Image 1 (cartoon, helix red, strand yellow):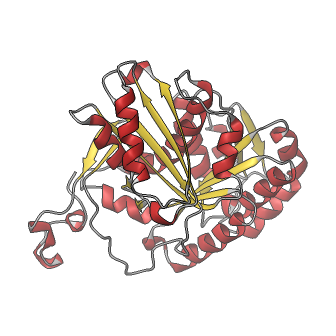
Image 2 (cartoon, rainbow, N blue to C red; image 1 turned 45 degrees about the vertical axis):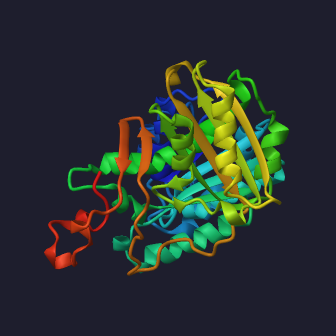
Amino acid sequence: MGLGGAGSNAVNNMIASQLEGVEFIVANTDCQALGRSLAPHKITLGKDITKGLGAGSKPELGKRSAEQQRAEVEQMLQDSNMLFITGGMGGGTCTGAAPVVASVARDLGILTVGVVSTPFRSEGPNRTRLANAGVKELAKYVDTLIVVPNQNLLALANKNTTMLEAFRYADDVLLEGVKGVTDLIVRPGLINLDFADIKTILSDAGRAIMGSGISSEEGRARKAAEQALVNPLLGDLPTESAHGLLVTIRGGEDMTLFEVDEIMEIIRSRVHDEANIIFGTCYDQSLEGSVYVSIIVSGIQTDVISPPIGTAHAPLRETHMRTEGGEFTAKPKSEDEEKPAEQQKGLFSRFFSL
């Protein structure tokens, strides 16, 4: 379920990717934006409050609008096993409506995962404050919460990166999370999981983070596993303090038992003995010659929501990412990029070369 403009865009991205076993819903206070959604199920929030003109960056209007449509939301969610809620925090609709939708899902006994973004620093401290308050409120009602800081998109960009490409990276965090869960259930494989296994890791899990990796090179299993342990948007996965890990391994029919074992050994070496690890494998003909690994790490300990103003980005290890638009590799800074800012050419040389 996508809330607001950012949530609708994320849902459109998933629909374009032709995910299996998923139903799509969008809800918005802006009727014009709602009309641009590809989702088959749409809810106009606060028809008598905002008159279809949006929440005006006021979370209280977003909350009241969602409460007004609470019965409609409840009817739409009936018989759902699991709900992903997505949107951008800091505006009016998602910030106010997401906790309401999550509370409806909790009352219905639905396993609920929130995947939300927080603003760029350039959007100002007030929007960041609203976003952080919205994240904290949403955390009260969801089972698992993944927060994607938009500020970190700068670490993936160069001077030629378009806005559309940058935001697609963020949307792909949700896409890979949903796909990682649904593939374990709906796709054929040697090690399939049922919904009870998914609930074991994600139910009442608190904050979470995810990563994914893919490789078709020599040593592809090791490389895919190592890539999955570093998310270029969210940073290193804090597996050492995790309570649970949900691992999805996908590949063509040429994927070997040895490769699956190698992947799991690498991941297990990064977690403590008490962590609950559940993994499954599934076949994907489009991945013939490649191995893909997706990891959701739940129950992590963190108080960080948005990077504080003035925070610099720490260098990441070389990271590979696959998106609808293709594949790219984010590499650590070169020696030239470590020079003082006044000696560098352009804004993005502070971060990464792609």
